[in-house]
Every structure is written in structure tokens, then in C-alpha cells.
Length: 293
Image 1 (cartoon, rainbow, N blue to C red):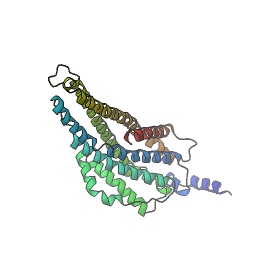
Image 2 (image 1 turned 120 degrees about the vertical axis):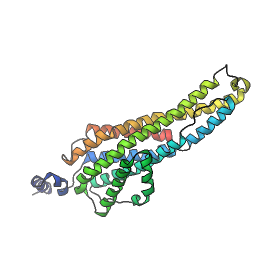
Image 3 (image 1 turned 135 degrees about the vertical axis):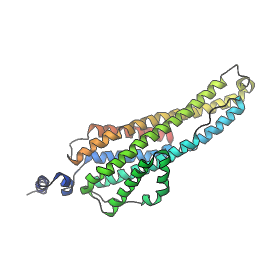
Image 4 (image 1 turned 90 degrees about the vertical axis):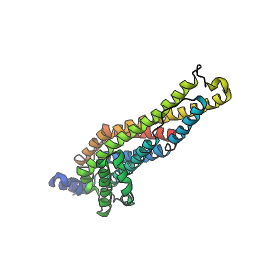
């Protein structure tokens, strides 16, 4: 009797909940989903860290513009943006951790951990200010999963536990918040782009008593070139971020599709929702690297 035939006999004789414990399966959809989440999460720090100081720099630009044109612009919400950025980074670490556990378990490998949960206590508390207590609890839940998976030697037999119940709900809770934070971050970029347009409009006002295009043409030309460079950079980032947001919006249907591997392992092809998510992540990854460095 072949090993494959014996495995099929075992699977036919045990309950569904124990299905994955009997034999290792090539759960391709779950592995593709987990790998794509890892890529998505790996991209996020580049987005935030490459842009963290630009709000302050743009505020300084506003002050310089006021001195040149005597036009007041509403202050940029740099403090709020900084809080959003910090929350994005914390939630990203949780998403990375979940995807790593899911990928390892799906491949029937042991889970390892760098004990992130012990270093995130104070940081998780800050989530309550921007994302809410439910999100902070969900992040804690994910890192508890990481510890349990590492200490208990989770393998593929634990795949259902990782991808259902409280662990799945924690992941989904974080993703809802993460989507909202990415929207806020995108809005902040748009606000800065709008400020550039306002500066341009004021500079083009020939009736302005402080129009330095007429009084200081060299300074005007230099400042105009700087505005052009900043605006081009912002537009590039906004376009890349839109693709990233599109990938984030595909994660929920991809999760549900990948979870079908729990009851129908070893599919012949990747499900359309998983494939769409993976493709969007790859496209966004390439554009983000170009726009954010």
C-alpha cells in the first residue's frame, strides 16, 4: 500500500477539525496570501519613514512663503500625522508577525520569534489614541499567538487555529484600522499637495502687492523650481499610495478565499481573490519602491 493511499484512508476516517493534522498539505492559497501580506507589511515602514520629516519641512516652507508673499496658510497637522504614522508602524509589526506565523505553519515549519511582544507594551498603549482599545487588544492578541506558536511548536496541524476564531478576528480588526490609517495618511499627502497649489495661485496673482515675481524674479524662479520638485514628489507618492490602498482593500476577500484551503487543501490553482491580492501587492511594491525609495 502506497504512502499516499494510506494518507487518504486516514483523512477519510477522521473529523474535519483534525484533517490537517493527519498529513501535510500544499495549502497554496494560504501560503500565497501570507507571503503577500508579508510583502505589503514590509513596504509600510518605507512609506512612513521616508516621509516622516517632510511635514515639518513643508511647514518651514510655509513660513518662507509667508515672508515672501505675506500669505497665511493653515498650519499642517504634523503632530496628528506623526501619531498616525506611529500607529501604522505598530499595526504593521502585528501584520508582519501574523503573516510570518501563518506562512510558517502553512509550510509545516516551526514558528520562531524575536519576542517583539515584550518590547511593544508602551507602544501598543499609544494605539488607543488613534485606533482605539479594540485595536490595541487585537495587536496584543496577535503577539500572544506568536509566543504560543513558538513555545508550543505549532505546525500545520494548528493551521485552523491560526486562521479562525479569535486570531482571525484580531487580524481583521487590525486590518480595518490599518485601512483607515492609510486613508488618513493619504489625506495628509493630499493636504500638502493642496498647499503647493495655494502657493502657486498666490504667486501667480499679478494684483498682489507683495508679488515677488515682479520685484524679485530670481528668487521667484528659484522658489518656483523648489515647489515644482516638491509637488512632483508628492504626486508620485500619492499615485503609489493609491495602488497600495487598492491592495489593502483586497486583503479581506483574499483572506476568506485562502481560508478555503482549510477544508479543501491542495487546490489545483490559486483562487481569483488571492491571485488578485497578490498581483496588486506586487504592483504596489514596485511603485512604492520607486516613489518612496
